[in-house]
Image 1 (tube, rainbow over the protein chains, first blue to last red):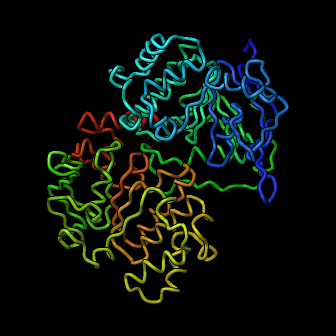
Image 2: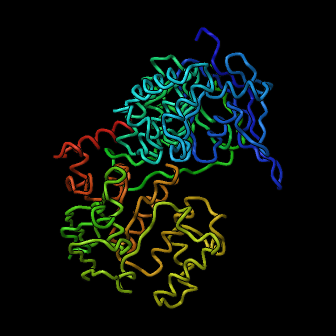
Image 3: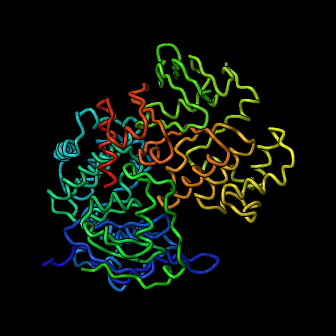
Length: 287
Length: 250
């Protein structure tokens, strides 16, 4: 990569102060994100979602973020005032959440939400915003955008809700898209559609994508580069095409524990967790 | 002998003009000791079939025979000692203020099981939880451990048929593998019959021998897992489903 990375993270920690001491959710990870599709994989509790949230400074007290460097396009996230941060969130960096049911406003129509999202970041007239909202709905493969524009979130299906959320995140033309398990709440057949849409948009607009998921095979198919997290640290990083040559027992365990339709086995492999993995230093995923 | 026979089953919700059919004219047989899978998208009616068998949906018509017993509007007590259900979300299906011990012993008391104390120890062993878990509350357990407790609860009255409603979809892949292995082992040891609902063809293919593919409340087709592996589906919808799930895993 020749130009400076969109996102530059070095030695990121996310800490939660609890009654029994400090709990480290993310423990000193480093990575960069260019105009590429970076997959972050791990089990529940591995710190992958926290990493995504830390980039947007979306961690509330008692949680805190520490890092040697946390730059988005040259701006230091950790020292920005909250007002500037609000411009950045959704403007230059957007996040697609896991479940459309909980992330859309239930008492606003789809159209109102889209217009609000756009007008929060750009000075555009209401009619212009409406036109752009309809265009973006069309772009995420929603048939009949005029009808959907006037619907409330409970009146659309899960797959459509997720597409609406993607549309909303894309409206202000972000440079970085963080997708936190964008398809886990969806059916397999709809999953592929949504992924294709994200893929096409990321390609067409030249964005950087951070794709957070627990599904290693899905990520391997969809991303360029993969980061595998365990217990708040990066245990391995590789090109998606070279995943088959992965070395770390945790990565292999994740790969082999998935039931495979074409190669049936009597017993699936079960992960045997080695306490040494937890203590091993984090691998850097900088490029 | 077939463990479960379902003939021209219809299930509907709503009254009068609002009546909408969730399941329409479904027929299938599950042999003793067989494992039958139901797959389809959300809203295709696959869970509704399980709920109708378990007696959780009163509005159905058709003929259902389970373990030799013809089902009427109400289920008998002996029905529930033969048929038990495991639900999708282990976070929601256990009482948050009851210990594992209490959950299991209540199920056994209801079915008049003797030697509850020794049975609980054995049940926890069966599902791979040691005796140390006996007096824990659900919030002290991980998702996989909770699902093991839910399976133990279903096995408490020694049923012969288990209805599994997406038993692993709320779990991580690594934990899913543990639960699937457990279900395979339990089935062999206790000679259980399974009817399992899932939207993941890989999971169904691992556990079941025959699969009913559902679309909009109807059976699109019934095929064996062998046929599915060889991609010998007849209906275009099954082909589409197969393609998308094979694409998504590689």
